[in-house]
Length: 261
Image (tube, one colour):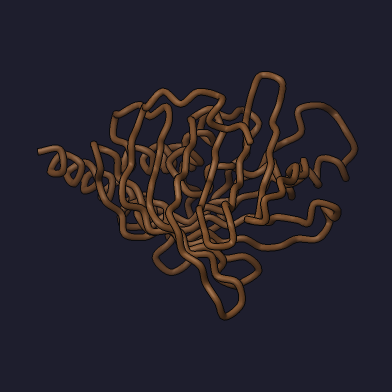
């Protein structure tokens, strides 16, 4: 019954979506917030999600070789997120924690050494593997500006960036917008997210852009939540991480300690 209700909801959203994109193709400006709310409804219906714990397997591709192992991914609606994969080389970790005092982050590539994440790499959404939270926060963040770029094939392309909170130079505002920019691609038939793209940068060089693309597929409805079970992350045009999810738990009561290194 829940699966039928979820499919019926997506069907209604599809009708709305077709109308929106039909108008857009007739040179009208779509209501971006309305489309994002419809996308969110297609993913979680009316279920409030505060946190998620995902488990599966991850394959890290390095050159011609790959290594595979169990993975766990966690995120909370307030912005903290964590990715851990136990690979043959060691545990690969990427985490960010959002508290009232600010944002902190760290990463490890499996060699047993942890590294603090540079500030310019903590301005895009940490939950890149769970697009529902990305859209949810864009809708609730007064600093986020989202624009409709256009229709590309069967995808609607939206671009989001953060605006400066305080007055500053044009250069400073431009850098903030650039570092926080994230592009979202929604399927025009279902409004489910198909792709996210953003830039990362070397810790010691904020001016060097390294493109990151995250692709979502194999959507399933689990406990009323429609989510991608296959997530692929490419860096600089090369597939880096291939994640196949097997299970998902929602509203588990994750504490801040889950996002400490």
